[in-house]
Image 1 (tube, rainbow, N blue to C red):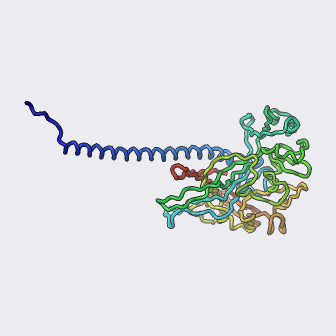
Image 2 (image 1 turned 180 degrees about the vertical axis):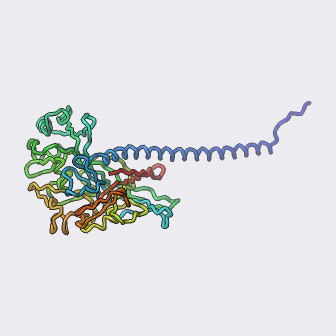
Image 3 (image 1 turned 60 degrees about the horizontal axis):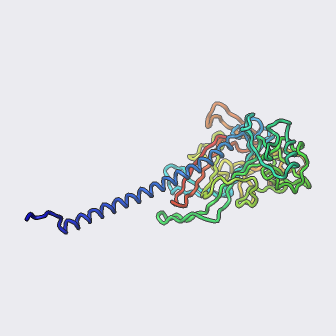
Length: 411
């Protein structure tokens, strides 16, 4: 009889051990690949959300904010006082939190801010319907007929089907409201849990001329949540581009004391959620420096840093909130204390002498900085802002990671 060939028991055990070892390696590779894919997908999803939001933010910042083509970066911006139409306001509730390690060789730190906000007017250009903003109203025919009369008898100003109103001017605000949840503490790096926020964008359309608006009872204000108005006695007062130069009249404020858009805003009428799970919304400015001032390593600063701290009147800080505002010069008998924009002795609501961040001393600017051929000297001026840098950071719950985008917009 022929002897049958086969594997010994030792050979079978060795082969099984090798197979199990290979399967263990493959399973770990699969887990690593799945984790990498999950992280990459989370990063891509966060980048997509940030991209959609920053496109809207950049469009808002790039729009006109004042009459004509007046720009904050023009050294002569303040020569004739505050703008005649529109406004730009920056709110910073306190010092931001630096996150770069001490002795960072770049000298440019990373910051986390949760108490910054922007509010400004936007004016779109063009004659097509796509160049107009839209607001919806409620209340039926009576309200709709009032909206139709807001402007000249042109189709682009009139109400459209569904009760919408169209115009190229609006007041816009970007601000954050705290969420009830936080991030997860990172056991690897030891980073503690951080408060999460929701980023809102508020938009209220203006009207061409308040005198053209039929009387609307003050009690109807809820029907105009996307239009800039406030209760003036028994009737509503609708804001024009001239009206919103006055800080008291913006966002339904009326003629009371100046109140910046607060954290945890209770009334969110006309607001849209742009991002959730936001860790930081940091606003920093590129000011035009006076001649002879050395350029810092990081040229983008906050309102609590030079050169903003060097202006004669300083920044009074409304309720601890540092404010840059273009203010107003209108005086129509509706409680315009701000109209005294450069009158020494003004105390209500602007403390000290006159408008914050104002210098009566001559200031010389060289363009281009620092030693350009053109030298401009202005007497009576606020800060000149050349650009705004905004960093937004969001968090992903599944992967416990964050992603940040930074945009710079010339002003």
